[in-house]
Length: 224
Length: 224
DNA sequence: GTCAACAATCATGTATGCAAGTTTATAGAG
DNA sequence: CTCTATAAACTTGCATACATGATTGTTGAC
Image 1 (tube, helix red, strand yellow):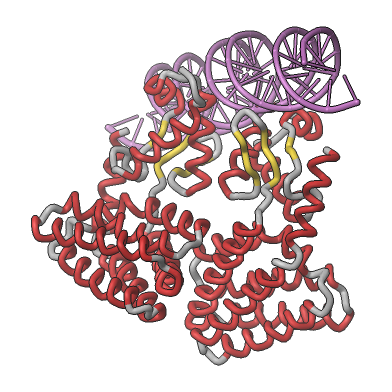
Image 2 (tube, chains in turn green, purple, blue, orange):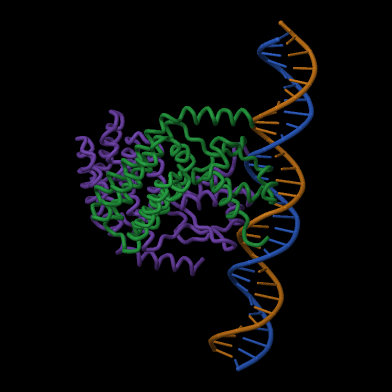
């Protein structure tokens, strides 16, 4: 097996978490993971430490690693942070986007439209991420964009739950429309304001879902 | 030896980097550090991985760990990100700060004034960080505040250089005054705007210092 | 039957060992 | 004398071993 194992493990675990195959609160047993990936505990530990540093995993000393489980307060705060990051991206993207950036945003938006028309939530889910990613890239600031992507992925497990809510997909798309228009017209402050609201409304809607999530996590914790 | 070694090592190394005792670009030899801290390579590696994830250290596969050295572009982008984070903090702090937060900000500002009057850069350097930290805390958003602190520390090695520039201390303090006034009057957008400018001006001034920094780093790389 | 104390088991945190890749030193060709 | 090829030395990345704190199960008291 050539190439380093740790980066591969980190990606695999992160993908599992983002995709929801590993659920918030779930325990990540080192020996179990080591067996599953056919490596020793060392690279597993190093991957878990990296994921903990990025917020995807919580390590409790001497007690093990768990998929990060955000409580109500942390969820609200995380969405608020995300809203501010997105707003900043919108402000800068409106000023600096290139023709390529513009095309990428429009393409992603068009794909979102298709997913809405088809009523395909899974596809919309992916295209939505692509639309936002196009805005991050359009800032021309790679470090800011990387932070935005990281937080987007951090919240992905929760967004997934969120999109199940009826009518949210249509509302989300309508908001995208307004955001895109502001961006294309170069109105940075307006784009920022709309992006902030777009993200915050998700966070607010979440308050209704948190109790359900907590129950689910508790059940998981009890089961194993 | 009670307690775990890794967190202690991470803090010690991070403090060394933030305080400038370990300089950007410097190599971090695992066995050397292991000997210095009288532990094995394992906890050293884990600490380095954590620092790499937070951006303080860069790990190049099979080639070792180095204190993160930001190039011109990365520096500009990092300062821009910091400016946006600070702006967001100011906006939220103006809305939500408690009486205690207000008192903390005013106290830090008063200490800054004392340092300016005494012409004591080292003290101003510390009190400046405390003033900004008080704003972060006043947002009431712990996750946002933690991000702000992290980025503040990431840029600290470069700020340190920056403050050597003549007259910067006075200008900085004058800007603080304006920021504090906006905050106390509850003018979130104004506070955000002033904070953004306050941070960005540092980034811009840096462009004049980057070549000097690069030379220093090159010399270090050649020497060690 | 419930609770508490204790013992056995298990997982984590650290140390050590080893293989593979990188860097540095050396020798030879031009 | 410079440049290149080669080999020795070193460092990292992973595997394995072991000690300590956590967890679980059992036994006994009430």
